[in-house]
Image 1 (tube, rainbow, N blue to C red):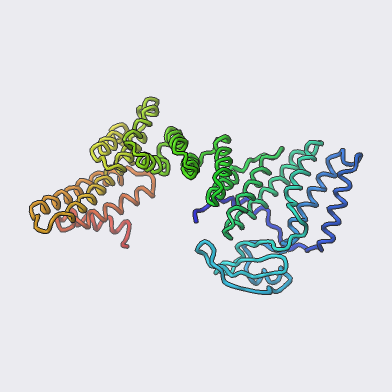
Image 2: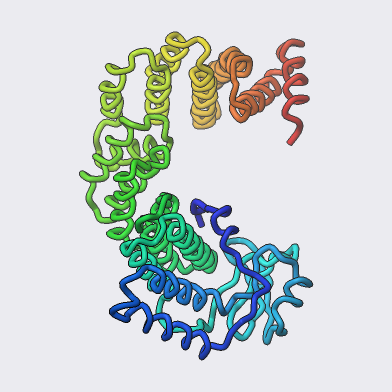
Length: 435
């Protein structure tokens, strides 16, 4: 299962532990009293009763897990829980193994290291969604003149509670519930006077909806992301294209990708989806290069646009065009390490294609085979200067490491050709280590 965007600092800030669990009857009585005061014609005209009502609803929500806190160990948990589990079992969720303990009001999940990872409420203190009612109460308090700071803090806590429950639902594989909860977190974060719109919650509401098959809901939230200026470095455009394709709307899918490419030409998902879509629609993928023309006209000295062009052409095995694009990127900006990385990678891609061609030759085609082997060796040799330059210029540690790893492999294949190649292998093997 793909990962959602987490907001762990926010979730951690709303944990409540070592509190007294009240009876459901007491919780309901407190809510009824607060509701009666807030709905009184005279008293309810002031903000304080509505703040109190919001607090009562939040207490109803937190009551079943008032003595739980994620991150605690089993020994601490046994002291805080005040009860022994009625059942225990090992469960695997999203590839991770947890110990599940069943309590009277909740199920708790411990990591293999013995820490409480998350919990789910099985017996809430009140029916319905008390957090939603709390949001409405605080919104009313703000309308009546409650202080921004007071209401904002309460709303941010509610966002955190929703987010926490959404992550739990996601961890348990209930994507529809997770999407609903992420959506509520997003709505709470956009309720005045909330000072921070939770874009992660909006994105996650879309992501979980899409993965549950509700593409209409996913599109709604992905478009909200774009309305807020949040494109996740272009991934939202790629996700919208996937939603459109799921609904068999190839025209919309193509437009989302074209728009995304203009704004985020380096996004690999956009490029991959666009190439695959053109192939699926039986259109010439080279037309994609034309989508970059506008960006090139506006930014003629931007080497990344030519690097992207090289990636597109490499994807459709137009080696000559791809080499020209990568070299243009390096020509525009000699310190642009990605141009050299692209060229080196392309030589290895071409070498792999030549290996396939050599293996496909008839067993008696000796001359042709020898000629292919010579081309394969030359392709490896050609990759060396490109990767060496990339390694020398790279400031990104991940890219530098990748270039070193490729150099180690290339030098290893060529080590018997000369002492220089052997020395190159020893150098980069010492840098990146052995497999």
